[in-house]
Image (cartoon, chains in turn cyan, orange):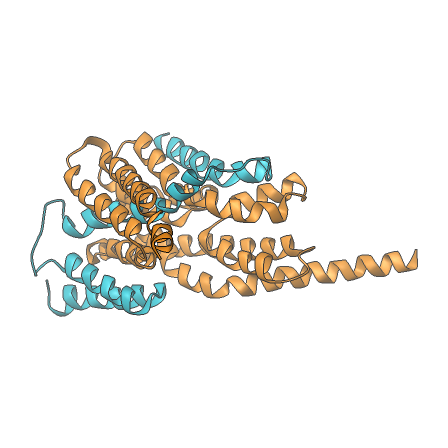
Length: 106
Length: 251
């Protein structure tokens, strides 16, 4: 039951956002401040997810050079600035993570 | 009459060609999405989602990042309303995509626009916006959209199933730290945005507030942090907007 509610709710939250403009088909125009605000949504949300995920990978604050999540995360940031290519970032970031976790046993 | 039949035949060929072209244009993005579908399926069980729940989520919700985030929030014990609210905030970016496409498709029948709304992912938007914005003769471009959606959607469901099977076969896969795949993907998505001060401000404030609100119940800190980041970005944008204009006047 909870799963049904979760999936139904997520469907509504996803489809309504995707559908609303297609439904009114160009009869609504956004004020510029709203368009600007929306452009900050993806980086703001994603960062709010990333930072705790790499600083508290096991549920507790883990600031140190033995935290593979943090180290690989920083490495991925550097790779991404260097190449700005999503697939390269993912592949090299995961390689770094696997190396630290299984190669060095961190 | 005869020429009418020929035209019908022609339009069918064009539709098929558009669909194939749409699928083909989405192919590189589909390859990029394969690992996420698989990892989503693998992580679903350990995060507390049943096999059918995981599959249903890919079929019904069809939103990669939201599905990943939902798993992370479930594993952390977040309440369902918080997961749904987060899904809503994460998906707000799709309004921008729709705003770009709507002027080109406003004349199409309603059922076409429903399909387009349901299939509006980052990947399909990337493939389709090229077709609609940069190429001529968009009379049948909605078939291109359909082709992109069918290929992307089919692949997403297939990879979810594959991941679920893998997770069942190798239960200790969860200890490998595959959740890092989500972080690294998001890092690769955020960095290209960092081109101006308002973006930097939004990201720094959002990350800092996310850490400061880590103790909030139901993972509500995520939404608080995102809203603070967006507010910071907008404020900096409005504050800095007049700077170049002023410089021009000073000259």
